[in-house]
Image (cartoon, rainbow, N blue to C red):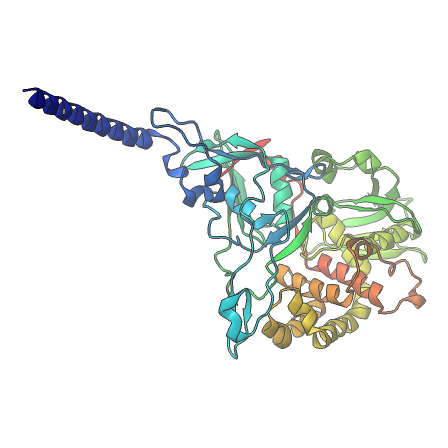
Length: 508
């Protein structure tokens, strides 16, 4: 009798437990389906940020939103507090996630990823590097990418927008990261439906959308036209936040003690057709129009910056043709096929020469202020054309004589020996373009040529400030001319894009 009662009690308990377990399981399943972030909590969506999410007990009915990083970028604070970054063409890990902000942080790196080095074909399966074959080279991938390198970032709850879990960024941050990735406009529409734009960049595709009456969103997606397994380039390249923002704002900054001393000068924007004279105005940037607002918004001190003002001529008492000590530059205007005539005096010529000598070194083309690009490229063109063939030959010869140094920098040895020298020479001789790949080719060859130079020495050379009779194609000249080549191959960027955007945006 007692045994029967015990069995009945235990059976009743078991049935009750199973029933409660079933109810709890169904409740959890229903709760998961009702969670607005249900599709956004997976490792496939969050990437490495999946492991930063808090775990909640089963009895929590309403889960709080997942968390993501606080992403900030500007001239004053760098990118998340860092000025020097390493960027990769594609995410180095398959765990980058589908969210645009997670993908971006899989492309931006705090430290340089481990360099790929060439290895013999028979050792290809033992380590990282390139397999040397008679046909198409292929890469053995084993690049060290630190999954936790951005874990120091402050976290914030993600915001639900349609089917996405978004982090909120400012328009200042957006323009900072776009210029770091060398973005250029592909399309832009602003009409009764709202604003939308697409930007191609070296590291991926940007899409900006701001429908009327709704929130503005930013999307970023990596390239689907490239593969780490077939890319012949080194896995990463350095970028400096301050220099990218300055070039976008049309400002050249250098702490150079020679000649004019400390240089901090801003350039005027592209003008409508007409005749202008370029005038150097000390501390004149606060009175400028256009990029002054961006520079100020980025945290720059506009009151410290001199300004190259384009003063329109054409009055009855004004001289509209250059005097013997002046030169005339023919520049693009805001209207197609109608040029601007820019007269440049002696003082302004000295400022331009100084600016060309202290242009920042870059391994990638710039997203650049078009007014600055117009003036510097036109001013440098006669000398650049004079040395263009010799520069192209110097690059070709460097590749031929020092291929092992390029191998050590992570280039595909087969590409170095078969194509690299001719590609670099052809790019220099072409005179202009918009290929970031070719800029990387040329700039890395010059780094091999200037082996041992630090960044400060690359930033400041003395070529343009020399008298014409004392110039020669020495190492300083190669660096100075290469920086002009980078200008020729840089992308114009609308530095007034912020006018079309709200103060904050959802980064999907």
